[in-house]
Amino acid sequence: MPKPRRFIGYRTAVLLVVANMIGTGVFTTLGLQAAAVPNGAALLLLWGLGALVALCGALSYAELAASVPRSGGEYHFLSRIYHPALGRLAGLVSVVVGFAAPVALAAMALGRYAGIFLRVDPLWIAVCAIVIITALHAVEVELGRTFQVLATLVKVTVILLFAAAAMAHGTVPGSLSPLPTADTLAWVFSAPFGLSLIYVSYAYAGWNAAAYVVDEVSEPEKTVPRALTHGTLAVAAIYLLLNLAFLKTIGLDALAGTVEVGALSARNVFGDTGGRWFSLALSLLLVSTISAMVLAGPRVLQTMGEDIPALRGLGACNRRGAPTRAILLQQGLALAFVLTNSFEGVLTFAGFTLALFSCLTVAGVCRLRAREPALARPFRLPLYPLPPLLFLLVNGLALLAVIWERPQTALAVLALLVLGGLLLNPNERA
Image 1: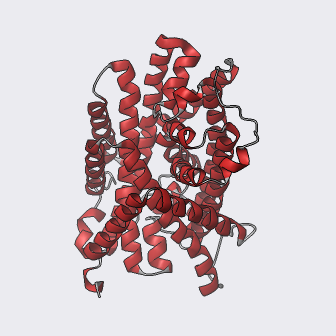
Image 2: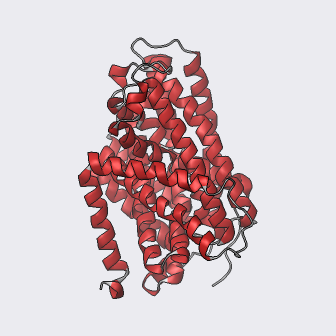
Image 3: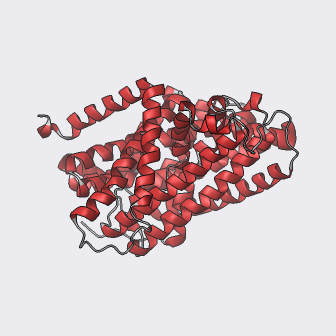
């Protein structure tokens, strides 16, 4: 097996993290959160807590990526730390839920935003976006990398310009105040707050993106930890600024339950015509998100193909270095999610499953330190064991909230895990 080309440097790795994180969640979930937690200060605290937890996760993954460097993310980490059977199950989850479902969600959001301007069925826009971006990455890795860098730089620039315009705009009547009120603490300690943490956790998902492409990163022991932490901190600042802008420019009655939060805010800031144009611009920003996941996700399938004989074909690359078969399989799954046309259902399912396997991986930091204390660790997470413990505590509470509030989601995830275990580990059914 030829050594992979290390074409991802520090800048590209950071932008990969940023592009994976800034996507569907921040433009679509605030309305769902506001319907359950109608308190501005509690909502901003929700996003601040999400940032802290994401940073704890990024630091934990950074130590793992530096200690046991290899592409594949949770598939590689859980195989190495626990058991290959758990790793294979994590690989299935990464492909189906970690990347295919978020690609579908980003494409569906893109369709809804662009549909406001183009007056075209959002479903067809979503399908076309996935097909075109997949073609770019399936042909050549360098073409995909260049497209990814440019799309992400445009995304960040447009978001910052929009946030500045929104903050300069007057406060809309009926909007939620970002200042604490008498019932803020009551909302913070409520079950709906815990459920909303899953939405926020999903919005921050992607902080581990660079861990999926370790084999293609130059000096991975140094570059991956820096990319994970710096990318996460940058996105946390952008998210807090964006949500403050959304709360300022959208009244609660209009905000609660809506998905097209960014479009609604743009219409209030720029007027109907300007809002339609900016909705188109916001839809184009999601192209970067889809592209980042098409770049990172298939590397899990590729790594699994190198290890599992039955998946050997997925480990192959074309002449230009792109894992074409793995890319096509992942995007085929994404198209299947799009055709369900159920945004909130896919969102809750994906958020719950990703949080579950992220917890297993972060707990693996503690397990690996106890089992292999002499293992070389070029990067050691600071203040150990506080970061992994905080990550596990907050995500554990969020998982319990989903089980309590949406037991059907937990049962669907359990069914996926049982089915995946039977399919991927047929000799271990006993």
